[in-house]
Image (cartoon, rainbow, N blue to C red; front, side):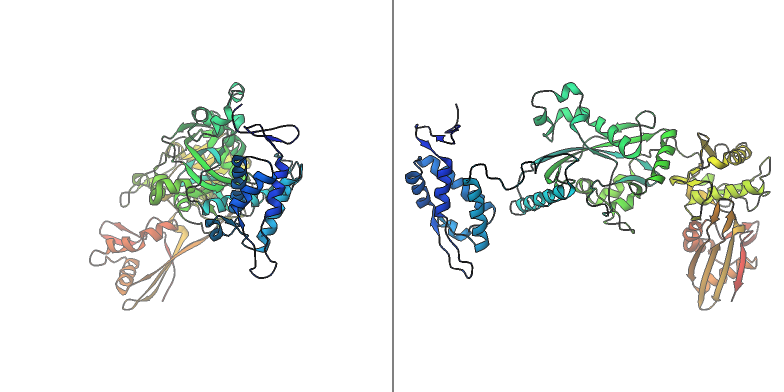
Length: 568
C-alpha cells in the first residue's frame, strides 16, 4: 500500500514504523495547546510550532513525520482563514489575531477532534432543483466569498470549475437576439447573454456518458469529447430558450476558432466558483418559418428574449438599464467588439430584394396616387394596374410605419413583431389583396408567410412616406437665422393609430433665406443643394421624408405635397 498511513476501523493511524496513533488524541493535544487571546485589548499568548510538534510526538505517541504533517495542515487551515498573526508566523509561532479569530479556531478544531461531529445537516450540500432556494443562496454566498478571497490574495489561483458553452449569433438586420441570463434568485437583474448555454453531461450519447473517466474528460477545458458534441448543447438550448428546432427552423455553422479561455468567479445559484469558460461560437441561418417563428416567440417572451444592436452589446449599459453580459467577447475582441459583431452574417433566410439607393421608394399619399422609385433626382412613377382602396392604403401605411420603426398605438387585430413583420391572421385576405395589386409592378415588395405573417421586404432606410403626410414651419429672420420644424402627422387606421413625429433644426440666416426662396419657387444662389443636404438629409429622412426640395427643369421648390403650418 502506498502512503505513510491508513485509517483503521478503530480510528487508529498505523504509521510506517508500526506505531499506532489515535487521530482524535492528536487533535485534542493541539486543542489543549492553542494559545489564548483576551476578550478585551491585545493581550495574548503564542505557541512555538516546534513545541507543538514535540508535544504531539510525546503525548500523542506518534512519529515526527506525522506530527509535522498534522501541524502543517492545521496551520495552513488557520492561515487560510486569516486567524493567525502573520508576523508571529514568520518566527515560527502561532498567535491568534483577535479573540473572535481564536473562537473560530477553537470551534473548528473542536469539531475535528469530536468523532462524527458535523457543522451542517448531512444533506446540506445535496444538489437538485428540489433544494430550498434559501439554502442554495446561502451556499452561493459562501462559495462566492471564499472564491473571491482566494483569487484576490492569489492572482495566479487555479480555477476549480470548467464550463463549456455554446453561443449562437442570431442576427436580423443590426439586431442580435439576446437571452435573459439564468439566475432565478436575481430575476430583477437586466443581464443578457447570447442564446445558447452550458454543456451538460446529458448532451453526450449514452454510450459516451458511460465511458470510464468521462467526468475527467469533460472537466478538461480542451476536451475533445466535448468539442465533438457541443453542437448538441446548442440545439438543446435553442429549443429550450426560443423554441427553435434544427433543420425545421435553422441550420448552423461553427465559427472557428473558439475564444480564448475566459476565467471568472461566476455561476448560477450555488454552481458558483472561480471557473474556466470555454466558449464555442455558432452562426445561425434561419429558415423562412424559423425567422417568423422566432419573431413571434420573442413578442410573447419579452421577459426572457430581446434584441440588442451591435452598439448596445458593445456599450457598458443600454438606455433602459439592460446590459449585455459578453465579457468573454470583450476580452477576446477588445475595442473591436462592435466592428466584429457587424461582420457577423445576417441570419435571415434571404437578403431583402429592395436594399440599395436605386430602389429608394416613396409611397403614395392617397389610394389613387403612384409610387415613386429610384435614386434622388431620378425617381420614376410606378402606377398600379388596380387602384388601392382606402383600407388597402391604410394597411400599406401601417406596414411602412412598422418597417421604419415608428410607434403604433393600440394595435388591434394584429401583432407587431420585430424586424418589420406583422402577424396578420385576422386580416389575411386584405393583406393578400394588397400584395396582389403591388406584385405585378414591384415583385416581392410584400412577403406573406404561412398565411399569418407579412412584411415589406425593403431596407427601412430607403423607404419613405408620402410628402402629403408632412407639415413644415420656418420661423426666424433671414438675418439672424431661426428654426425649421418638420412634423409627420398621425394616421388613424382600423388596427391602431400611426403616431406622429417631428424634427427640428436651428438654421443660419443664409439657410433661412434659401428655404424661403424654395418656398416661393425661386432658385437660390450658390451651392445651396449641398448645403441643405449636409444640414437636413439625416434628420429629414429619419422621420420618413426623402427630402425637403425637388428640382423640375430650371425650377427648384419645396417638395410637392409638403404643406406649411405657418411662418413668422
